[in-house]
Length: 286
Image 1 (cartoon, rainbow, N blue to C red):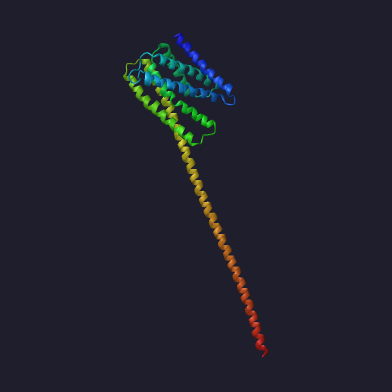
Image 2 (image 1 turned 45 degrees about the vertical axis):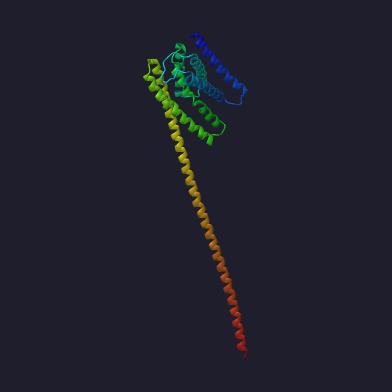
């Protein structure tokens, strides 16, 4: 037990060292940028390890959960536990996360500490780690896109939809089936309690994601409606301008025609006056 917890301390120190190393290498970036970089690296590492444990080495969590942990499972759990200790400390120091995320970190640390000390629950914890961390790189990539000014891009939309799909598929869909199968196996009370707690936290996150997606969809629809209204107003304004130009042109033509008519009438009257004077002079002379 002492060696296991000492190993957890070593891994936590390594994650802290990686964070401070990034801060020294790129001081122009924010502290949150470096922390999220560490988070993305951790997610990739533990996902690869947990995939190897579950799909290649075994045991299979849907049929053989509740037994002692294998050495690779214990190593993966200690790496993940060391990271969560670092990340919880960072969140408490900078006060960037709300109560749901802090609760998730505390429950994860408690569960992995129990698994590390007892040497049990490795199979179900590996499945939980994989389902929880498989969406984490997308979440961090989404944040990096926003920080770089790529918030309103097609790539951002793809990342958002992929994150929602993977979260719903693994943590809600597969997670529900895994919890059901876990209760059907020969597992103890503490393992079942831990599974229920993590499952409820996943649902809490999922509800927040659905609310966010609904607000975003409503905002997009409102924006499209406003754009459509503005386009219609612009078309009406263009039609009015065209009608005004047409009316002005017709009035100009009418004025020109009246002026021409007056000129013609004036010229005709002048000729008639000359003709009348000529006739009067001609006959008066006789």
